[in-house]
Structure formats: structure tokens, C-alpha cells
Image (cartoon, rainbow, N blue to C red; front, top):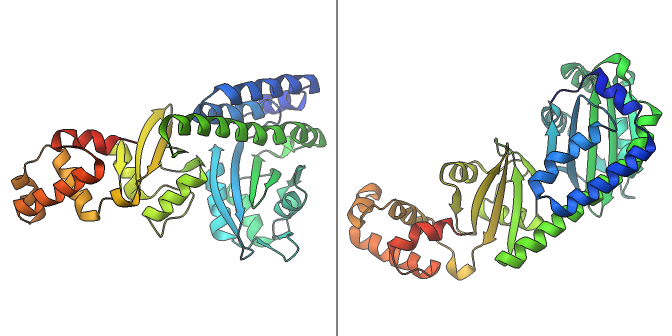
Length: 339
């Protein structure tokens, strides 16, 4: 939903007592909404207070080697493209020994070193040639940033406006200082409540929320760990391609280290993952045989598909049945869907 001048004007005039009403609604929603419902409500709530043309809520990890890793984000308009270009082309942010962040981007440097406060700048004032090219590429006149430290994690909100008359003002920063820390806190509450509910019902379960292209909006640390075990070369912020392909095509994924199912809500997808116990992990060959057999193919048909013998297929399937704790092929499809 594009943001035009009337929205910006309305946000400039938002009274502080309206902010208090929004804070109450924010925390109430955090306790009642699902993760994807809450994610979809965050940016509209923010827009009414600090208007923007594009926005992103994302996280960064401060790594032991002093480098900075970009993680998942929730974005609107072209914000994800801006961030991905920024990370790819201008990957020079790092920490000094004292924990201060150094960057060619003055806004990032100020925001990260003074967490809990909102900062903004006119991008025309940036002297760095590559940063100026970045602002011209995305037609960005004004930028706004608020960072919150959470241990090694940094929660960040970035906003952009494209028109020169729509510069961010001190009043925007003041409203941001009131609302944005609560936004991150409400997000933590929402995730914790959801995690407790999931784990109470499903044992060790984790959750990911992604968009249609597999871009991760939010993910549990346990989910990231499982994906890293399944695909050693994988890294945020997008799901592994084979994982996304199976989920979108079949609605489930069964791997060596994890099982997963997916549910859609509007344009977002909620993925629930569980670890596969070491003794129950299917080998790659067993997994291929299981998937073919789940399509109701006979031993001979599976053997023909794989260029092996029916006896080999039968032995592999019996091993699969034992690991998945099922009694035969009739229960295989359901077992592969289980999360």
C-alpha cells in the first residue's frame, strides 16, 4: 500500500495521546494474534505515527569476528531491495574492540552506537560516492533509522521517504522514540507466547514466517539451527531453494535433520519445524524411496524409477517404516507430512 503525502501529513500531526492508545493496542495484539497476523499489523501501525514510502524491520547479528550479518526482515515497498543492495554492495560495517560499530553510512553508525534513539538524515548530505549512487538508484531523499540492542542481536527499523518536501523532522524522531522500542518488545512477547503454545502442543517445535519468494520475515533460532544442519552452506535471509520447493509443492518437507509443514495466510507462509531424532533420521537414499512410495508406487515402479532392484527398495522402505514408527506404506504419506 503506497504512502503518499496525506499519510505523511497525518503522521506529522499525530498527538502523543494517540500514541498511548496505539501502544495499548500493540501489546493487546501481541498477546492475541498469530505471528503472521502480528507481523502484518506492525507496519500499518507505525505508518500512522511516522509516515514512510518504504520500510523494513530487520535484525543483524554482531559476530565474534567483529563482522555484521544481515538476518531476516519484514519489508514494505522496495525496502528489501534497498537492504539487499546495501549489504551486497557496501558490505563494510564492522565492530571495533570496544563494541562500537564503524560504517561509511553515518546513519547506521549513529543508530547502532546510540541504540534506543531515532536518527534521520537528508541523503543529499552524504559525501560518500557509493552511498550517493545507492540513494539515486532507489530515489531516496530521506532516511530514518532506529536500532535496539538485544545481546549480539540488533533489531533495526529503517524508513525512507522519496520526495524532497517530505523530510523527516524532530517530531518524527520523538514519536519514533516513544513507539519503536515498544514495537520490538511487543514482537518479542508475541514470539514468546507463540513459541510456548507451539512447544506445549508439539514438543520441540520451531517456527518461520516467510513471503512467497522464501524471504524470511521472522524465524526462531532453533529453526535457523535446523536449517543449517540440513544444508551446511545455507545462510539467511532466504529459505534453501529445495526446502521452499518441496513446501510449496507438497505442503511438507521430510529431511535428514528436520520435518516441516507449511500453512498460508494472506501473502505470508507459516512454517513449523521439528528436529528428527538421530536414530530416526532418514538417509538421502531412504528419503528418495519414501517420497516415491508415498505417491503409491509399487516396489517395482520405485525400483524402475531409481534403477535398482525391488528387493533393495523393500529393504529401504522397511528401514524407513522403523525410523518413522509406522507399519506400512499406507501410513507413509501421513508420516512424511507430520510436523
